Image 1: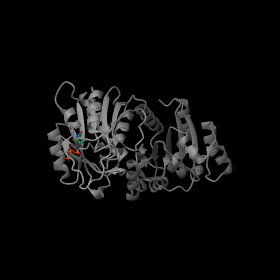
Image 2: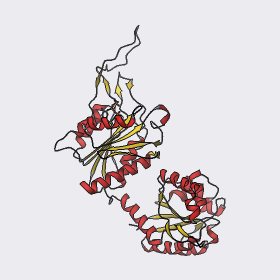
Image 3: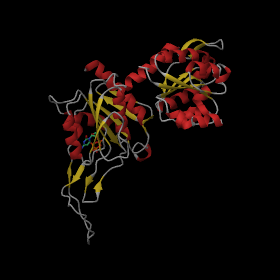
Image 4: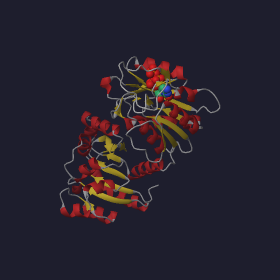
Length: 403
Ligand code: CTP
């Protein structure tokens, strides 16, 4: 799994840095290439020369070094990797990451990267359990930073407890698992999932349409997360500004009727997630030209659009084993979501508050409740990507038990 993988290893200043030479050796044995950035305090524990000798590459240290920058600019350094691994991740570097601080090469690379980030925390037990560190940890997890460890044990400071950096074999296993999921050998490998996302546009005339504020961010993130767990994903997207996710088949549609048709044609599937904010109504007759302003404004006659979620949830041989809907509500969130689940005959509902102050429509975070036959589970406010990953993990657990 680690063969040909490019790891950007960021070594911060903790005693566990002494384990890093062994980590580099094991990574290279498995075919990975390792490039190191070491912080000033990291260099107090392990020498850059050792890391350079073991990684077979230059070790980068200084943000303002002319030679480093001309050899490889810090932005390129942060992008030419498959994953960034911070080990050991000290309380200090975690705090800087959570704050978005960028005052040295390591933190600048972490802020500038568009690649996944994994951290292996290592610190004294009191520092680890301190509310400040725990709050930073939550912030990082919400940004989809993967966390490995720490374990319990004797700490270098003489105390015993949580805070010991994960052992080298555990770090290797976490990295392998990460790449395994990405290569489609994950828990949802072999399953087909259909995801709807974004708004629909219902034409009024040749130039005007009815729409809503959905950005498609949550639906696209769900498609990405399912694909990362190995599912083959068909994403049916209304008009959005979101890029097509990697490794996902995307069908672009405009109207609810087109979304319905594309969803039917994408069947069979074991999993469906309807995250689109489908327009409830369409305009009955739409002239092929632009309506001109007259003495009185035109009145629009509307009729109801097909309900994609309810249609796909209908019992029958084509019914996917797990149908998940979203419920966008401004009042009585849980109660309405439970009613929607029953009315549409779907299995789960992800209920989210879309009232004006919530920031859910168009924003990057979501506060959701998972409504199932077993009850209601309230999740903390999370980045939409983290909501998607958590939902995908739940779907994978369902698939493991039932499919
Ligand atoms: N949905 C759908 N097709 C529609 C309307 C909604 O597939 N024509 C799906 C959405 O993708 C979502 C769920 O149904 O998964 C609930 O959507 P929501 O907008 O919250 O509710 P509505 O059914 O439209 O009801 P209301 O607007 O009255 O709340």
